[in-house]
Length: 172
Image (cartoon, rainbow, N blue to C red; front, side, top):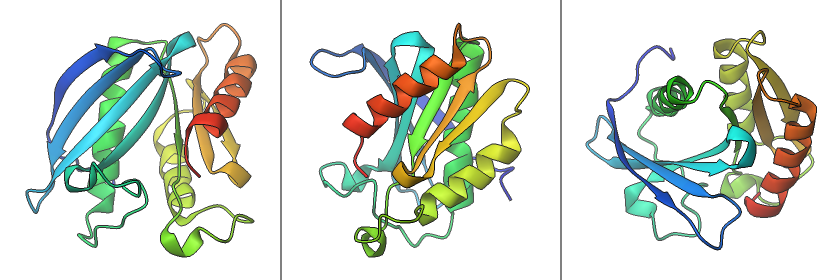
């Protein structure tokens, strides 16, 4: 199911001022309907990367991370994002990653349980990223999932820092 991905391209990497991350790496791909997607890797201290993706058509929308496409190709889109993570890992073997499972409109009012996206991402990542290479951290009440590289100087400290940073800077 998660063995197919779309071809992606690296667009650019830029230094960023006024944000908690120091660099922004941009990637792009097209899905089976020829819709364009953007994948953003936000690079923070400690070789930590936050990953976000959305359809380009929604780039100006404040809800770009919550929208469903109804294209029925979520496994391929998600696997493309995972391939981009692997690409970055090949570039930087010390890289750690974090993401959130943005709530659907119907989940906005119920903050007591993990979102549908978080549950899906969690299942995928647990099966595709080895616990021998990464420590897996989950903060279900905030829909945060972290893959902390075991080569980090202090995986627990990095996880604590990343969790707090994502809570402060990512929408839930």
